[in-house]
Image (cartoon, rainbow, N blue to C red; front, side, top):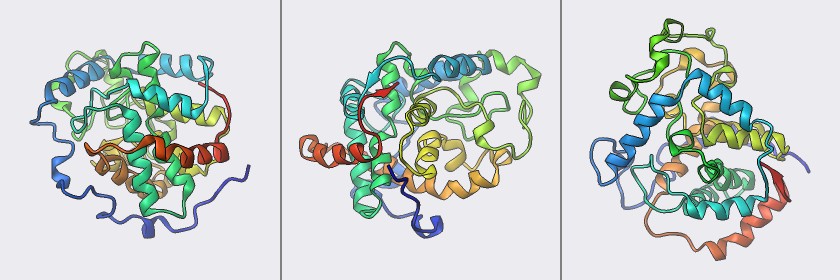
Length: 286
């Protein structure tokens, strides 16, 4: 299958006001101070920030890196997300499968000429099937952050949730660069383990016929402290900075497409099945 390449400069694609959900102010999203889901969200991050360590991330990466857990098609995996509600998300309380279609449809409306980008919207949270394989949600969902270096201020609940993380007692892990070198590149940084890195590994292992931008958006879409908070720039390579506008473009649809009127999945499936058949067909190794 032919790899589809980007056909526009990222600076032309990134429009800050595009993709926002009509009728709900942007400031109402990602509210981590008030709301009916706040206790559940906080407890998920407390567990995440307690247990996500350098050793934990290395173990999980080794455990799932071979993609030897099961075989599923993309649409079978998407159907499994009917059973996953993200406990770290303050904005929605419905299954992740709907959010996948919401994101994809938002991209489809804004980028009708980029079917590979639309597919990224459908795929981006598919790694959350880890929550159905016995992994706790704190090891699956939520914003990601680098382990092995000092936690930056824009990490959600950073001031109140890391006190029991054993890495905080290791001086090697608590400087600005920690175990990394300046401008080493995010691909060489250990990110907290979750659905982003897992789905990236699945895509690489199964040789998805998608452009590098697609792999990159999947891998770092939850890295809010970077793409939205502006932190961890000291670890970024020139490639990371080149990709940043694409991650930000994707983020608008990931975040602002969340709404309570759910998509008509049965009507949308044939279109997205065709994209799956084009770029990542058949049973895949997970």
